[in-house]
Image: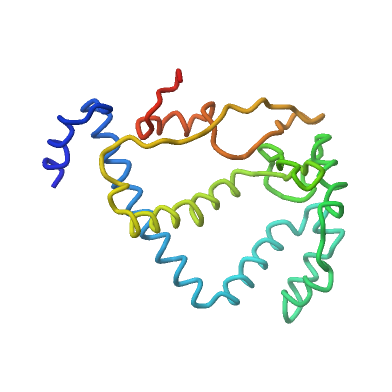
Length: 213
């Protein structure tokens, strides 16, 4: 199977043998990881309410000692008979205005405010609603986004358009952002991948334009 796929590279105008082999390995690893992620996703959807309750409890436990967790009684919520009901009572529907003062403390350099895990950046929204919002972003969030989101999308793509995983270059539109920095030193900008990220550069072999482009 691999031999047949590699033989087709002789007709490729965008691959060298080395980049083709690397792309083939990347795609095959992603297929396996994406298949596993999709199985987990579908299984969790079968018992959605239970899974969401577990996710909520896990977040409350992880951040109970933060300034926000102490102020809003996360530990007490975890002792209640129904953590979801307790959370709703303490947290009616909120807007960014409810969170902004806490985010401002993070921007000034304070730690353990909203999240126990250290922030890696403040992700900035586009501001189309009238005001740009800053959202604390951590490595755990980035990992969860890939594990529970991107990989499931990859499996959906594999099922729908299996030819998209053949040995070929693809187009990815991205831009290098102009970062600003908060008072406490955290960078502010989009949390999407960009050409300056190490992970992005490692995957350039999948795309049609080299880094100098």
